Length: 435
Ligand SMILES: NC(=O)c1ccc[n+]([C@@H]2O[C@H](COP(=O)([O-])OP(=O)(O)OC[C@H]3O[C@@H](n4cnc5c(N)ncnc54)[C@H](O)[C@@H]3O)[C@@H](O)[C@H]2O)c1
Image (cartoon, rainbow, N blue to C red; front, side, top):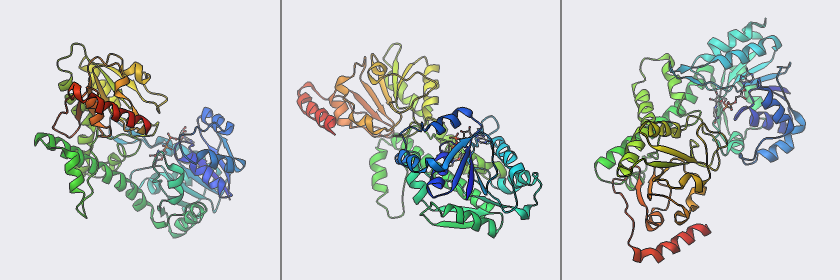
């Protein structure tokens, strides 16, 4: 089959390669010429495990270009940002992709929308645009099939996760199932277009609301002088309870955005909006805590450890670090940042040593694995304070190295040990280095 994938980003590119690996002839289309040139050159980075091998196997049957060709099937993977001022879905990229496909659409072709959209978008917006090429609705197949893969393990999950396919009609759903079953090993479940779009939003909203609840628990725990991390672990021993981890806020291209798409068409999304507000306000809570920790320091400097929206990825889209940095700067606090994975960020990223030099507080925002092996004895801080918003570091070790440690959600502030405990601390640091 000849397949055209529109939008060669986080989702479209691996999808195109998996289809090519399954034996299809795949033309990837992107409006960004630099992306097309980079992918044809094979410069794909090594962040996603299995991508390089997949590319080596599939590149013979993959080619990128800026123009939409004639094809048997078209898959749309273009961005659907949130228009922040209005808090509505920005569907211009989807409209433009459908407009590019319309003149190339021939009888019996299949068009699948993968982009995350408000319920009803494929039927009300995409199908009418596709019809503008001259075909009637009955002459082509249309489906919606969103992706559930997690950044950092995209290729594996694209193959192994179950997927939901919504069809304009049963034949459309079946056609799409035939295409995806060429590389998906998970189960493909069929439904109608709007239900499939709705399911994608429900999934991400469910996670956002649960994180908001965890964040609320963390703040209430501090008010009650207890440790949320211990309480959460014990509560999760209940067979039907699964409380998420609290943190400095929710980022990424999906969870921080998609819940608003559900609110596009409905007046009854109070809980969903409240959850968004709680998560969006966690950076304020982080900064309130930081201010308390450096209250005795004149002209304080803080170091943000990790600006990616989550651990072990280079993606900083919608990261809570943005808001934490801006709020700190508005308080007159100087901010320096370190992230070994992120390549581009609006605030300068420095080496660990430079970012911590003469700093007064480390604020761990992202739980990259590499942070666990940082040796606190090697840092030249002016004041030794650590705020761990993810509860991911070895607090005994940091306290032993002379740091005052505060963990988000734990009312108790850990203070440095006495000099005589130093040998024990050194041993711990050495153990941490060996890991
Ligand atoms: N990133 C994720 O983890 C994830 C997961 C599930 C769903 N999604 C959804 O998938 C969609 C794509 O997300 P992404 O993260 O891959 O986006 P992305 O920004 O990484 O890539 C999108 C690409 O589409 C290109 N593009 C824009 N308009 C185009 C057009 N008319 N024709 C061809 N190319 C065009 C852009 O140049 C860009 O290279 C979004 O709706 C997103 O919500 C993303």
